[in-house]
Image (tube, rainbow, N blue to C red; front, side, top):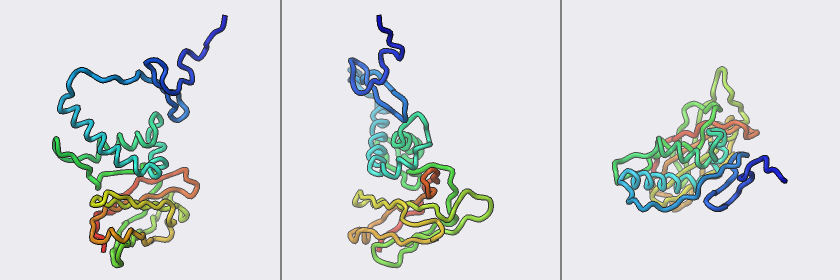
Length: 213
């Protein structure tokens, strides 16, 4: 007679009966397959679904930034799910049914790496954002070789511009090229830092809202 020491759901991936299995950060997770309810949803449930969809749609499109940015935020969740959870709690504004994303509260990265001082953006050339920042002094985990990631979102066109590792911390400035058709639009600008080996990240920072020349 054989014995199944690991249990009936060991290494379960996909659907088996009413169970659905998947691997998350080295752990085999399974749950009961969802089913439709015969009870009409309440307004609170509808609001939650709308807010969840709003954040999920936004975050999923910058997953290449979110994956390193939220990798260590919650050991039990994927980076994308952890980012969705954070922003669902902190970055939704408005009253039912008129919810929207508060771009000033959005984070795509959370970490312990020190951020530079006084991040700013100047706009003097068409379709460009001139980022600048100051060096961190004193007892810090920041290094001159830390890499800078930039993200810009254009709500008018629902488009992102992202650039990972485009500059190093010691450069103290970077001119980010935007698409020519962004001229005249208002954009939301962010940036973040990562160590050269990618093992540490900073929080992402909202630099501000700007009208592109």
